[in-house]
Amino acid sequence: MKMSILSHIGTGIMALIMAVILWGFAYNQNLDEAKVSYRVQISAPQGVRMARDSVTVDLVVRGPRGLVEAFRNRPLGIIKKQITDAEVAGLEDTKTITLQVTRQDVNGDKRLVFAELPLPVTVEVSREDTRFLPLRFKTTGAPAPGFSFDPVRSFVRPVTVKVTGPKSVLDKADAIYTEDVNINGMSLSDRWDVPIVAKIDGKTVATDNTIARVYVALDRKSTTRTLKGIPVKVLAPVGYQYKIAIEPATVDVTVEGSEQAVVTLSPEQISVFAEVKAGDRPQESAYVPWLVVLVPPGLTAKAEPANVNLTVSAP
Image 1 (cartoon, rainbow, N blue to C red):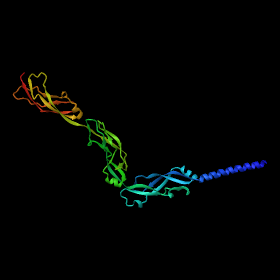
Image 2: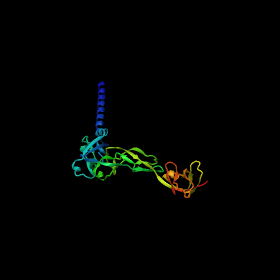
Image 3: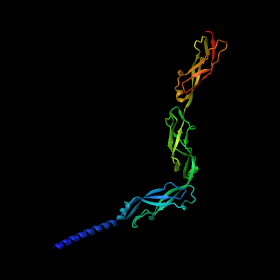
């Protein structure tokens, strides 16, 4: 009786084990699908430039669940494709080449199915060339009031840059540029390290320098203003005893300098003098001295008329 019970228990255990094995086999063999990613790495013959050398594609894989799960958990796959010499023979301008990703490019159990394959992958190629192009820069914004950008005294270093890129692009390029330099609100000349833009007409190029030194020179804006009726004063030696008459008694003064200083200048800040010398004595004809005009530092001025009639008579 006891052996009979043990025999039944052993049979049950064996049946359970077999059921688990059969369930696992059925599970693994049941069909499943998953989305998997591949990086397609593209290479080209020497002297051919590509807009991109890799692209990531997503593929749907179908097959037995066990194989699909193993495929889903693998590292990112790499597919290598080569552009042949025949495909770029006679290449002068930019063209688009289509490469086909096929089932043979994808490693994996033959029972796995990739419905999208063959899959076209496009890449833009062009004939590569190297040139030395002038380096230039542009400015944005405006300096502080009273100042102006001086392009003649401003410059960038290096003067030229070695550029490698599509031949068709370099054939038309007259220069390569740095990033724009913002001079908004500047009031002093200054210098910056500015990145070189590795693009020409929207096409990516390679440069032997990535940073340029830009020197920006500013000038004070110069303007003129005429103030009328400025009185002429007499500058005589100490103890000078003769009577002096001036004709005309007032003159017009034209001032030149920075815009801000000229606009804010008041008549009280201007002094005009006619100088009397110690040896000047009364005489029938008038002396005609040149006028001296004094204005604040940074400004220049001249009087109109530039000299006056100075009459010396007895006290």
